Image (tube, rainbow, N blue to C red; front, side, top):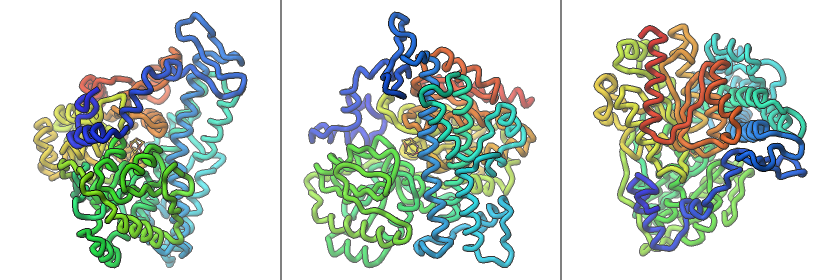
Length: 621
Ligand code: BF8
């Protein structure tokens, strides 16, 4: 493949050419070397769950049709999918746990770098949990809230509180199907137990537990992460910024924060503003210090502070290849271990900070809440002192960058509408806005980088579907200029008029991947206002370039919440016709929504629009 076939993004193309010229390998090259990828793995029919195996089922029906224990392709595929959901839910929810632990330390006065930034949200959460706020300091309230939230993770019986934010009709659906979740830790442990040799061997039963686990992520772990982070760092409101590799500076110390947890990136952003650090940068010959984000921690600081985003998942190596990054600072999730070797070819310091995540070739600067700002300062200092090592001859920053308006939390959207979803509902009823499309998820070298994202979103807005976005899709949209209010010109006339009257883009950036919980809250607000279930709304979801296990958990909880979801890359389930049928048809009878797979973004848009039209009819619109 040439660079044009690899990505639609000009900055990415430029850096891929540079990588070729410098003889540097990227994910695309490693992807090529993996071809042909293992057919058994792609179909999901390989089982490594015990040491009688590994076993694999012959998809052509000529060889083994059962593993040593007797597990069929249906059982193996379902079990493998359940383990993917468990891993994805664990990643989101363990992130959430760390946010709550930091929040608790803040409340105890043990993490002085953090404060309560959104007291109104703290009080709203306290009232949701019946925690008294009268005559009590915010920290006392926060302490009680932190303890209750911590206990939610391991709640053994009964649903956790945030799942009660779902419309009552949705909760009944979950109860009827036996998938109303308990605490996310319990559900994940049960996934691992059920998929151990000789436990759960009914594909439908296994998949139902997958839905249950995913709900405990979306309406549990992920939602806890979002809400606690909002209390600690502020609930996002609209802010303007820039995106793509062109945000890196020729004459400043460039620091990239990459990963997922704002607990770290917030402190880096704060420490970079320290006048002593800026003075040191000047002493080193730089004009200043510039922090840019990557992936979801980038989205967190973009949403709250307008910190520019350097790119999405497949651009992480390219950032180093610009030769202009003094430090690539990472915490957890979606960080390629390849960054270690790659940084060694440049002057970039690859700094890992999480006690949970180590990488070959990384400098470890472990990060603990008690000394948050101190560690952040040390990290900045390391980056600044690395500036003189920058080899000017190797600096190659692509010029491309796009403006973007971001920061559309559910609160900000409702606020912009005057505190009630009614204006949006009126626009949907009048047909000016046909419905809402939630487009999210990763990059994947199986797909031309950003092609699926940008084309699907363009097609939706052209057809008057308002798009809400998170994660790497949001960054793709930012780079393509779709997060500017002027992008309303690319929308159909109805959506365009609505956006222009509100001064907002037709694609609303709602945050990181844990912030898909914001989309759930917005969907619940719309459904409750109309007195219907989420599955009745003219709404559809999509993940055009997904690759991570987190995305599998997200897809499952979005469907379990009643939203039809189109995947752009094929999940490893085609080895089982039963599992494939359940996901694309049968599950509809249980939760009122199904999955579809459609790699072509134009056809995917058609599927979503058809679904939206059908739901409009159902509502009599
Ligand atoms: O959590 S979209 S590649 S960065 S997994 Fe990862 Fe996928 Fe990007 Fe954020 Ni989400």
